[in-house]
Length: 270
Length: 270
Image (cartoon, rainbow over all chains, first blue to last red; front, top):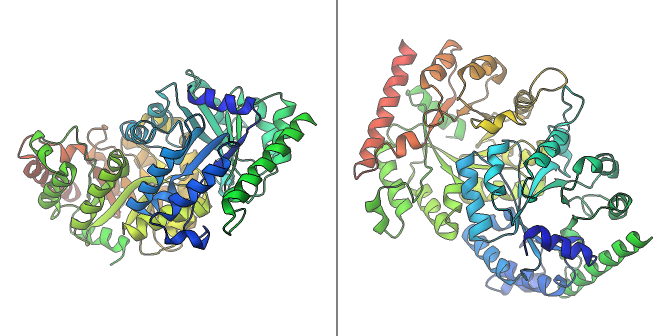
């Protein structure tokens, strides 16, 4: 099963939530800190309680690289316990000249065997080509991000009246000859999603910005439902993994993803 | 001495070459491969022969992350032997939403104690803010890169007639309140540099693209000389570190940087 098939299988069974493992030693429950590898213990407990309900897991590399070698060990151990029928996304936002991107692609998609990675489009086609060589992976290219700074460059208006992020989406559709490209599209502003969804074509969409960043789950689901369109993932990080800061954190995370799945099911059938 | 001062000290003494340690196990001389850490042995020899002549060292993270934990060990050991009066640049091209960029900044600028890092501007101000908090560091923001893909988005023309990369440069000047921002500007096409140098203001410039990528050292030096402008670094990676593929590789690297320094000196005095 390739990466896109994994996403579709989950979507078909009503699973759209990507659990963002933005696991931070300063935020995990205090009782875990006596372990040799508190971040791994935290992830292990979260994965155990959420794996039945998750459409994907996303590991934000900064949270692991922050701890240097120890962090990379936590990351590698975490990868090893995620069931391989669930899409595994490296949120690394890489991108460099061709021969350098090739090394990032090898490290993350081959050696660490992620199904998927987020990449930054700024440097253009040859910075992305090495990532999209393998048709079995799924490469999410940043289009419109969920942060305030999205206004600085992504939303600059071009001479033809379109925006930079729209030009990125157009190019990604051209590069998608192996059906292995997707886009990241921030869900903080509902109108932006509804105004641009027709431009996406059939590209899978990873949507950050729900929850702590202010986006509305209802609006996202409504927009995709209206277009009779699946192939999307709603990322929730803090809203799930830090639902409780007590010993019941993992159970609380499991309950929260069940609640979100039920809400999505209700919205789709509404 | 902060990062900008390190750069200026070297420029004053006629040093403008940044040695790019793009050290690749497939390209280093075969006799090194019997070592426990061939990449570190290679870097150690290169540094020994070039440190008197280098203005900066740039470690391209992809080349180290490619080897996962072992690669990070080579990187950490390499950092430890670079003299601290020489600017040490992490070529990592990071950039993410604010709270995530903060972690990359901590890992690379604090824990690994790099003087400098390359960052990607696509996600805008809050993706860059955490990197520019420390006035003693020097943050090189990608403006125009040296690869063919630069044409895809960096060179899109905006509604006011300027290009995306020019808007990035304008913003970086605004963000540069602590005198710790610089730009990456590809030197592959001489005309682009001469046409844009006035826009740079006083921003330090890191110029990739000389040598293997086709840019002209003479044109770069001539353009800066004409403007009576220093605060720049010309990156050379493959042209120095792989000057010879035999046992004399380190000596050849040392000779090559001396030759480049002499050429620059000649061009400045011409």
